[in-house]
Length: 478
Ligand SMILES: Nc1ncnc2c1ncn2[C@@H]1O[C@H](COP(=O)(O)OP(=O)(O)OP(=O)(O)O)[C@@H](O)[C@H]1O
Ligand SMILES: O=C(CO)[C@@H](O)[C@H](O)[C@H](O)[C@H](O)CO
Image (cartoon, rainbow, N blue to C red; front, top):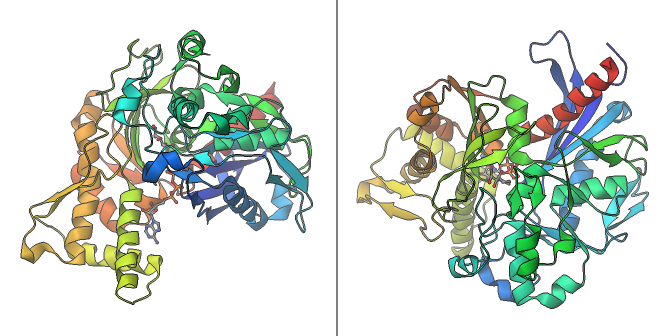
């Protein structure tokens, strides 16, 4: 085997940042091994920069995300970091942040290792942001794309800022996802590059022509100069402009990927596999045959969307906004109620008690529709609880009903028998909200008419590392 075939994958998720070091292993059936990995909760939620966003605004502090990233890097073995020949980055799709060209960060020695610190940057407005009402979205021009535009999508957020906070927009001249920002800072790029995976997640991007809907956007007064240039996923965005921890200056960095595509890449071994990822949100994904083209016009009422994957292929995706975040909301609510009652309790303790209680409670008549965030195809349909009887009110009943509700809601978006019709033979479960929750696993097993197996829980980071590993191996061969 050729030397230096270690790659680093980074996933900038909604709840946590993850990093994984991956090496080629010809002896292993998967062809690779994960040498080390690390995850850190970002705890980056912060108040919206524009008061007009109201309580629907969902923003994250970029400084805290980068701090969590650096904590992950610091926890990885230094001698392995020295061998890294490629860096792959993925992250939460749809979101947008802004920065000033040339002033997005400053490199410092950061104690033991060189690190970059965000400088003239905005918050990240995330995919969970709800400031764009149905009326506001209906006032926007019709995109020339097969994907419709929902609240939390980069272009919708920019339109909203243009209307409600034009002064704010004037402070910046560059925009990207959080993962495009990290790639741009690592490589010292004056303008960020964006893969079609992330461009499609912003809306107003045509995946057939691989171009932004520039004419439509310009006609609506949209600041098109903020849109990044688009590059193929799997291509190289640049090389590190500085040594970063032990990773040498000049290391190749891939164009940032969507976390959805990166986690699918880490575990979809066969075309006949479907992937069920439950982390902050939920995605059920199947691959479409090569040559498949999605319909030309968007259907905002369709619960299944087609997202670009690699080599101009598509994934069929039922993307529910309500996954682990619903459990997290329930946990926050309990912790807050306890505090109001004068009791202090750790969230991790609540998770383990409620999962244990629901594991004992094998069934319930309580029915929870868990759509606290609505869904993109049904934004105004929020959560509800029915079948409440005085015998079904224990923590076990409620947690069982919540976990069942998350799975049933997904089933209502993409009936699981449809997977069979697409030729799917097994489902790979991934994501840490699933791997850490035995009851959710039971509900998945109960609902799917197909065998379900489980991957690792740093999936998107591993997927991002693998894309770069495969690139490095094919470069070594040629
Ligand atoms: N102690 C715990 N036990 C079980 N589940 C937990 C615990 N803590 C958090 N979770 C679940 O894990 C979810 C977060 O998953 P994860 O860390 O994969 O998020 P993420 O990677 O940032 O998500 P995404 O990739 O969607 O952005 C939470 O929403 C919650 O449901
Ligand atoms: O969950 C996410 C971020 O943590 C999203 O990026 C999803 O992957 C995405 O919203 C969905 O899968 C596709 O729309």
